[in-house]
Image (tube, rainbow over all chains, first blue to last red):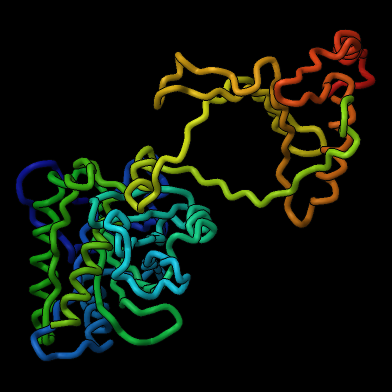
Length: 256
Length: 144
């Protein structure tokens, strides 16, 4: 079987008949601090093209054609909070004192439902807390949840990789706001050491997807982990930060 | 307990939300606009045990500091008087059980405590020594 060695590019054998059965959340078997390296990619449509779910089905079809086995659904949520103003409505934002951020993000990751992450983008701060922390925020009443976005879809096991392909939809609606995917590489937690293999995988993925002639492409945008005080050792906090980055990209693409 | 108003003290019921957080949590709160209001140093002991409910008993003195974080220069707010707090978490399904457990534990502890007003310490109850000795030495009848 193909085991990645650190350093140097390696061929990615995605077509071999090795079907390693994995439990649906192998990350749970690792020590809590160690998460496998992960890349988030978002779908960037060609100018003037609107999003549609056909791209999602084609991407899922590609995962299967590469030998991926579907093994369940996943859902990660991002909540936008805006400051409560004195009038209580959370309305007029222009009268805020300068040290109050215009928004903060709450992130609930599918792989750790007991945890809650909060991101202050303007200060490059990611907080990790228990899921109960969202109740703390609610009781404090200084910020109010305004928009709840779900990233959800199917996940596929593909050798040493796990792919999660999903759509971004506001809670309780079907309005498609974006399409994105997670690529996780189980054997490595070092971001630098896993970079080469992620690039190789991405190349194969792009090649396979290109055959469908879809009006756009997946893009991986690097998050500046160092600015958030995060190390080379991948963690759930890294994923929370990547979701914030991904969201920014999706919103920019929608506005364009 | 003895002292003015002792029989009228009722159990306070409050909603509590607890969460662990990463070590940057203080920076986070400053980041969302909170500002330091005041600082108190609490010194004392905490005991945790199960007795019909999950109890936490703390005996603490509150201390003020002349400068921020100057723990060496802390001064007691109520010299000679400590705050004894007895708490137990309750949910809807065990509320009544927790209430009776807390009530009975408070009655158990009552001979040792004497209410004091700040600035007017009543000192240690004369019977406290004997009550403590009796509680600690009781064979198997009143073990915690």
